Image (cartoon, rainbow, N blue to C red; front, side, top):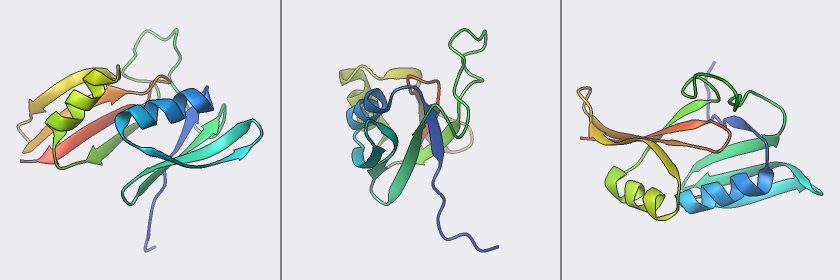
Length: 125
């Protein structure tokens, strides 16, 4: 198989809240489907993430004991992690791991979506 592109699909509990969360992170709403929307997309640069209301995948169980094990984990590569960190703090996005120089040669931080999905935001050092 030769894959040309991959688009993750996140299971979300609230489409509008998810669109707003991604907007605060600096992403744009690409499209939505349904009235009210049950499927949609956000994008940044050439990257796109689909979102599905209450389906297609798994999100964190809010009552679960291990908040780091629920939802989907994804890596997003950027040019300036510290700038993204400032944006997150200014917009009330939950930062679960502050910018850290990791021994594997990246500067990385983690943020958590309201449904428990975790984004590892990294830059090469």
